[in-house]
Image (cartoon, rainbow, N blue to C red; front, side):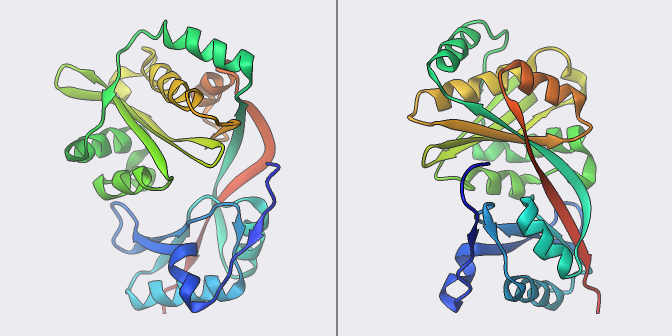
Amino acid sequence: MNEALRTWDTGPSRVAATWNLRPWPNDPSAMLLVFVDHTSVPTSADLEAAVARARAAGVRTLRTSAMLPRAAEVAHAHGFSTIDTLLLLRLYFDASTRTRIDDLAAEIGHSTRPLRAWQHGRAAAVDQDAFGTTWGNDAASVADIRVATPHHRARMVRDGRRIAGFAISGWGGYTGYVQRVAVHREHRRRGVARALVVDALAWMSAHPLTAAYVNTGVDNAAALALYEDLGFERLDERLVIAARDIAA
């Protein structure tokens, strides 16, 4: 990633704008430390303040959102341990890429439709089927993903009255993000994920963006194959999710 990493302003008025805590879906003993700007590097004071607030809330474990290497180094120095590693991929929006995306959008085999707020619970059920109860989102965290960027698009593919899969994407500045893609196991290998990602990229391509990013597990061969087939390239940086036992 070429953008410079920034250090957070840790003044009292800046706390809410740099990180926040959320319940961890399906586990009341854990909380999620969300870094509002994932390119930033936390300070010791930030991490200790987050630990203190989570401990006061009575939870035993504090887990982080995905961190770039420099942020992970700081977290590791303050008692956090890696629990998952993600690959980061990038797609540049040049003229040839935009033309290819237009061609792919004209050929996708599934129609997509808007994912409404009242359907977040159903989307969460698909997400937990796809990623398991530990890593799957609940309705509240699906809603959180939608507001993580200044602009977003939430779409789904349906099978009758059921949601077969959904995707949430967003953009801010000149950068787009494929934030979450989940397909129910009964609908895998049917082109649902591909249709959702192409839909997201076509939406991004209609805006003056320079690149799109996505991350996925290092062992998620199916997702990697899909993204690389669509033109994403792996970056050297790997994202880290870490956790710390904060039980008193």
